[in-house]
Image (cartoon, rainbow, N blue to C red; front, top):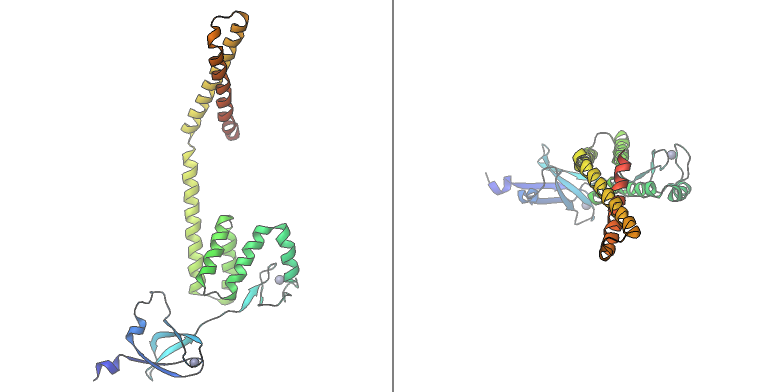
Length: 250
Ligand SMILES: [Zn+2]
Ligand SMILES: [Zn+2]
């Protein structure tokens, strides 16, 4: 048996049925989670995926690239055809709703806009990452998860949606951990030392004031007046700086 012939891969373009022929190198360098190799038909110029499965006839299976063309209603999240202004579910006009939201809640407006970009073609990773970055910046990762879960209800189980839900989980995890580290840096010990230094500063400041008053009545060391004034003012200033963070905690 001819080994070269056995390794031959024959497949058809799923759009125009043109027959192609290649070999196993087509699958080299593919990521583990990839469905198959990306191809563009030389005849009809359309993109498709060549999978690693072949039918009984020996032809390898190909699949059209999924291009989902729909959008979410910004108000009720129901799906509607891309480009349609009125929501068939709640009747809101998307253009009007966006105008109002842009003014009243610009951050939510930005997030919704990023989400609509995803829906134009959910296979583009870049738009997903942008949406997740924005959501994280606004502490709205739960909102992002909600969006993906809504999409899952409509599209059914999808490895792509699961992938991004996982990424949201990781981001939330990292967020909680960083919050924890931040709170640890403000330990009771740190607060105690701040409180102690605050007391020291106010003590020095009051003592300096006392010396200045005495000096006014009976000049004991007139040459040092300038220095005492400087130390007193500085101590008042430092005491004032350490004070607000303490009163906030109590
Ligand atoms: Zn074709
Ligand atoms: Zn709606």
